[in-house]
Image (cartoon, rainbow, N blue to C red; front, top):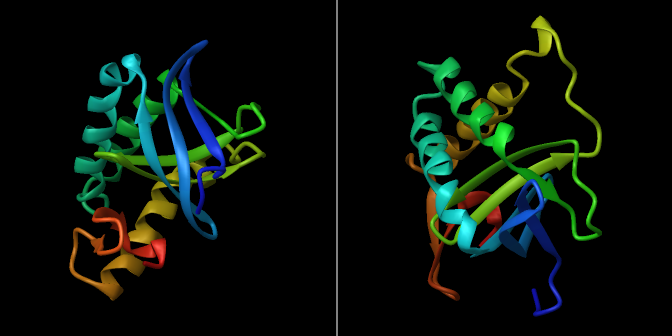
Length: 152
């Protein structure tokens, strides 16, 4: 992708935390390079904790849900046109981000309580079928760690 790549924004209230410059798309996931702003240091530990808990998703889904809920309570994701998306599942590791999003809120209620956990669990199973966990690959062309689904 080029310098004119779409830029998503991660915000807390009106404060810009990071710009997410899209580098690749593999529906339904987007991949990006994270350009952190000053306030991002305050939320980075939330993303680090979420990734740690993601590794134990099958054994302890409630722990991952609590970690991800902590992220969602603090930040919003803005699309390139500036509108906040209703729902998103965002992971950040180092300078790399990957997420999926929806303009519609996820359904609420007991039946859908684990919607995000199910999405993560399904994605983890797909990734495990492709390579050993943790499922990251190095892109030789840019020397960056990327999720396997980035297609590189």
